[in-house]
Amino acid sequence: MPIDCTGNLTADIVFDCANAPVAGIEQNVVLIKKEDIDYINTATSTDSRVVIDNLQLKAGTTGYLLTGVKQSNGKAWELVKKENAPDKFKHTFSGVIFNPTASNKEQANQLAMGAKYVVVIEQVWKGEANKDAFEILGLTSGLELSTMTNNSKENDNMIMFELASVDGYEEVTMPQTLLDVDYAATKTAFNNKFAQAAG
Image (cartoon, rainbow, N blue to C red):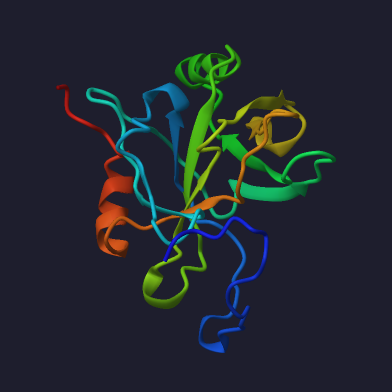
């Protein structure tokens, strides 16, 4: 079935009580430089604009693991109304760098150099058959560092930061669901940081 772009509902919106909502994301996330994504071979589902069937990186590139603890990392999105264009969505990822070591500060400093990032997260709530476990933030326009703070008297001296859609350059959909064949295959790709061998 072709994707419907009329803005009209095409199916019922139902509550699946067997898969009631659960807050939070799993501890670890993968940060990917937007320029490292192979958009030609990254496949959007033929049935839905919010489902990605394959997230493909360019040869010789990899994502980067951000280690979390409990609910230290988080994601959010919100509608952005447009006056003369289709509405868009602002994506936000809030992250924590636990150890302010020189090597971690070097990577934090790299985030401030202006590159755009895509973030892949695994939700605690995974849906029926774990089909909704993974989400991608910032796939179309990318996210940029919007805040970064460190205070020795707060948050146990950890570095707190946010990556977010830039105003005027928001995403065309809410965060997209990533399902590459099934949960197990998608989890394997996630654990491997979506790394691609050199061509």
